[in-house]
Length: 246
Image (tube, rainbow, N blue to C red; front, side, top):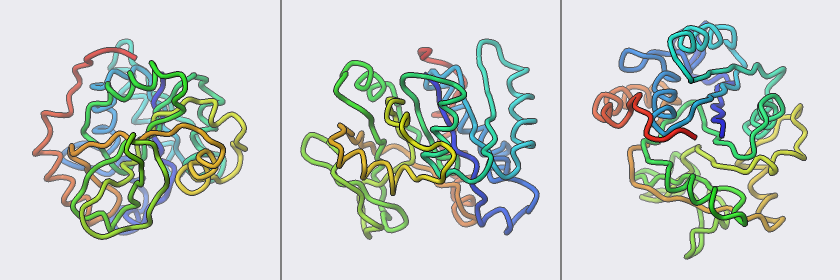
């Protein structure tokens, strides 16, 4: 199983800090954003991480090559998007290069410090299940899209930015790659706005895995300041100790 981390977008935070540095390489608690994501994925047992890059791809590639050279039995690859492809288009583009029957897709501007193993086992053991969205319970759901699901945690749909405490889309998706096979990987397509609604309409079985674990947003200048404090506080949850390889 491979992990695809989406770092292709050019965020507003870049122009506010360093116009030459992609978001993934901005320092937070002494290390680049993508370093913390990589450590968490290693801790979850992933052996192969693919960064889908756009702006600043050459710098992300240089970082990835340096980290890979220091590791044994652990691989990082960088796929450069030929143009902005959207979250789904980028994932499909990566799967064409690195085929895998199941994949993790994660946004590169946030970090959910939860244990993925129960959800990974659920996807592995249930052949009727097409995918799982990780949902984080947060106090201020107004900044994110909320998830609506039934009593059996089947995804029903997305709600746009409801205020108050709610379960929001944490930007981590466990998917069977057949969902991406028919996508035009050269076109800008969104997982959230295009694919999930279409999959639900087609009768695909998508579940929501809810958690109350730390959800760290790193996608804005304001969020980065808070994220640094959270990274320091929860650093023990982000280790390089692989529990079980995938």
